[in-house]
Amino acid sequence: MLGLQLFKKKLNDESKQQVIEEAERLTKEEMDQIIGGMEELVTLLKGVSHKNSFKDSEMMEYASHMKDDLQEQIQVLQKTTENIDQIVQYTDNVQEVTKEITLQNKQNIKTVEEGQSSVGKLVKQMQHTNEMFHQLEPTIVQLNADAKEISSFTYTMEEIAEQTNLLALNASIEAARAGEFGKGFAVVADEVRKLADQSKQALGEIHQKVKRIDETVHTLSGDMKHRVEDLNQAIILTSTASHIFNEISKCEKQLTKQIQYIEEKTALTHEEVRAFSTVLQEVSTQFIAQDKQIENLHRFAEEKFIFSTEIFSYISQITSLVGALKQQKL
Image (cartoon, rainbow, N blue to C red; front, side, top):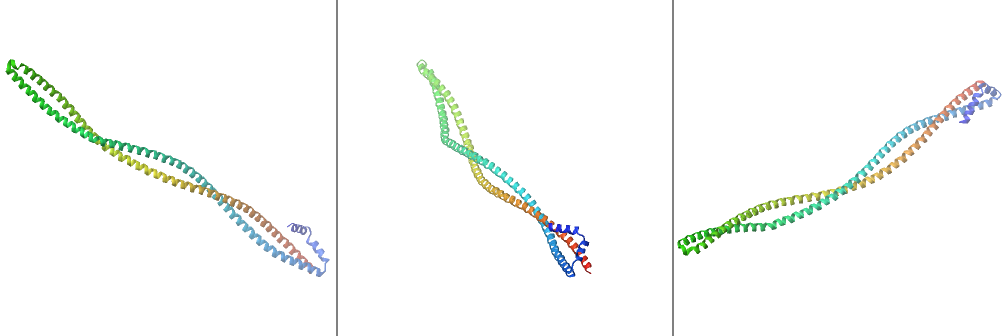
């Protein structure tokens, strides 16, 4: 390119007239050789310049397209890198959440197991209490029977007391009839009558107490029956609660396994995404380097195109000079 610039400068400095004057000193054969050589040079330069100009134009267009494509791909890569960074952030968040859920789930399992243990102890205690109620039931039945028997016995004793009182009354009447001889017997009859009255009074009190005992035993028996029914219902409900605790424990353990699986897969995905992000960054760096190379290629093609344009100018000047030399030859 420097040689052409010097050649251009020489052509600019020397006028056609000077060249023509120098050509007048040449013979016809020398002039023909010079003109033929210059025409061949013009033809050669035209072909080369035209070909180079076309290739340079194609190269510029190709470099421009490649630069645009690379710019678009770089933008896509940058956007993809941003998305990958977001995915990395999301996987980080998922890992944090799964860790928190795992810890909470372990605490839930511990709480469920403690509740399950407490319910199991409560069921055993209620079953033991139920057994005690069932053991007391025959005793209460027997106590109720004994109370009825005592009540029946008091009725018999009351009848005996009535008869004794009647017998004492008859003895008093007979003693009164006996006069002086029946006074001692009258005293005995009076004591018997008092004893009969006292016995009757005591039996009445016993009868009332036995009646209250019978009522209490009857009430206690009814209450125990209801308590046993309530206790059985409570045992059923508690057993159901224990079953529910078992199901919850199974679900929590299954959930723990699933969360651990998700955590493992998330960690693996996290590593893969990070590796992919690194690859994308490397590719982006390579694309940027290629973009610079293509930019240099485009600049080089522009310089060559300008150089070809200058050659066309030189060809035009040479062609004009050849025409002048031919005219001088004639």
